[in-house]
Image (cartoon, rainbow, N blue to C red):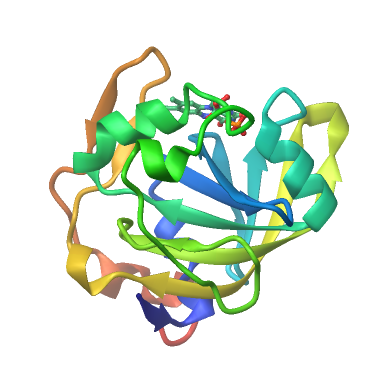
Length: 180
Ligand SMILES: Cc1cc2nc3c(=O)[nH]c(=O)nc-3n(C[C@H](O)[C@H](O)[C@H](O)COP(=O)(O)O)c2cc1C
C-alpha cells in the first residue's frame, strides 16, 4: 500500500462505496461490511452506522480504533460473505482469502486486497443513532488496484459498480480544499 495525503482521504468515501471496517480486539483481527458511511468534513472525519448487534462493535468501543478499507468490485462475494457471518465464530480473513499488512497507527491491519484504506480513531459514539464518528490518522492506496471499480449497495441485496467518470474540477476549483 502507498500512503496518500490524509487531506484527500474524504475523496475515498465521498462516492459512497461499500466498505470493510477492520478491528482488532487485542486478541485477533476481525472485519465487517459497512455500507452506511458518511463524510463529515475535509479533515478526514467520517461517520459509520453500527451497533452492539455486531461483534466488531465491542472492539470499536473498547479500542477506539479501526481501519476503513474499500474493496474492489470483483470481491463482491467476499463483501457479502464478510457481512453475513460473525467474527465470533469465523476467521473471516482465512474464509474469504483476505491478505493483510500492519497499519502504522492502529492495531487493526490494512487489507491489501483493497483499493484503499484509512486508519481511524473513534472520536465519538452517538448511541441514540448508532453512529460511530471516526477521525482518519493515515490513508493508503493500493497501486495494484489503481482505477478499480468500487461497489455501491442498493440495500435490497443488489449492488452496482462504478461506471463512467466525469471531470468538472475546473468549475469546482473554488469549492475544493487547496491542493486537491
Ligand atoms: C452489503 C452489506 C452492507 C452492510 N452494511 C452494514 C452497515 O452499514 N452497518 C452495520 O451495522 N452492518 C452492516 N452490514 C452487516 C454486517 O456486516 C454484519 O452484521 C456482519 O456479520 C458483522 O460482523 P461481526 O459480527 O463480525 O462484526 C452489512 C452487510 C452487508 C452484506
